Amino acid sequence: MPNIAGFCVYCDINRDTFYAQEELYSDTFKKINEILEDEALNNKFLNDARIIFYMKNKCGYKDKQEIDTTSSNKITIINDLPSDGNEDK
Image (cartoon, rainbow, N blue to C red):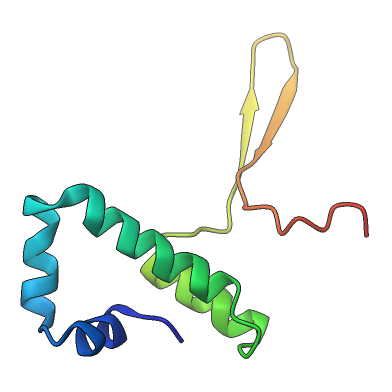
């Protein structure tokens, strides 16, 4: 599974050095984290439960549904879960 530890081994740096780059090279740091997130999401060798667990812990994914009620008694449900792209199935 793609992760920061593996990235650090690949780059021959330690984690402290990796995290220190966030302040100096914030765009590159964000890009690396986005690549690791994308690789984990699209990993065909992991089961869904493991991917979900990783995303919740590493990337801040949450299972939540917000319900906003207004004084006109309208209810709006906002589902902020990421789409898997399979809406037609």
